[in-house]
Length: 102
Image 1 (cartoon, helix red, strand yellow):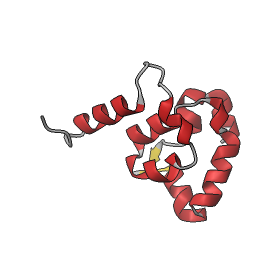
Image 2 (cartoon, helix red, strand yellow):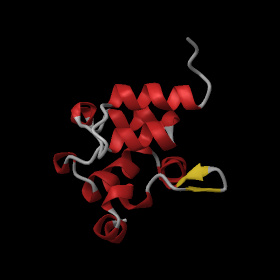
Image 3 (cartoon, helix red, strand yellow):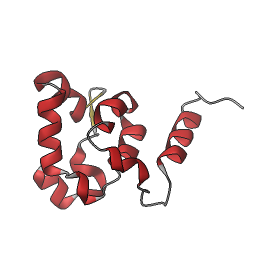
C-alpha cells in the first residue's frame, strides 16, 4: 500500500479497485477487521495529508462510508481534484446509479 500511495496517490494506492466485485478495502475489513485495517490505512494515508478519501469511498465503495468516515472526519470538508465537495459527489453518484429521482 505504501508503494501504491507513492506512485499513485490520486488513486489512493488502489485501495478501492475492485477484484471479483469487491474492493481491497472491503476484503481487508472482512479478513482482519475494521479497526486493524483502518489503523494500517491511516498509517499509509494519514488524515493530515488532505487526500479526499471519502470522495473515493462514495464513488467506489459507498457501503464503507460510515466505517471510513469515522476515521477521517475532516475529509468531509475537502474538495476533489475537480473542485467538487463531498455532497456534490454523493449527489452525482446517486444520480448516475439511478437512485435519485426529480
